[in-house]
Length: 113
Length: 114
Image (cartoon, rainbow over all chains, first blue to last red; front, side):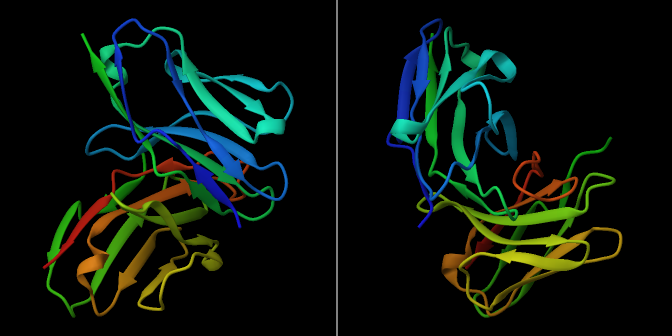
């Protein structure tokens, strides 16, 4: 069965520090991979996506993610976190056929000054 | 372009009642998906409509239903509400459907069942 695991429920980092959010997936084939961010009271905004090709993808707001097929992972990184990055982050996989997405349970990010 | 809009934003209902939520996709988008978001379960896929047809359905009971109109606007209905239905219901639209296309999310409808 398809599943997405975000092992870190909550992460706290200092402003200016680097960030890595983990995502592992279980899927029969290589899916499409996404990272979304959700601010309080808001819907989800796409940060970046991986379809194929270069396994290091760049997104908005200075985020990047690396697809590692051997580890079934798609970890999100940012070299220097800003206070405005505090939000909930969701990893998602989508089937290459059909339009069904599976989301992780999310990682809540707190940024301290 | 206007984003995805959802109405109402907040709703309070009593157990046993039914509720209808509405979603207007981005102009030109033909695919609309619905998700239920709860603190314990995260985001769970409800169903997806494309050109007025339900193409995919998640693992939810038949109390949850939806439809899509010719203008791509979509509604979802929950009958015989239970306390566990309290959640944020998110709608997302995409241009052609298929997971390779970005989904744009609305702000959600917060449903509270008492």
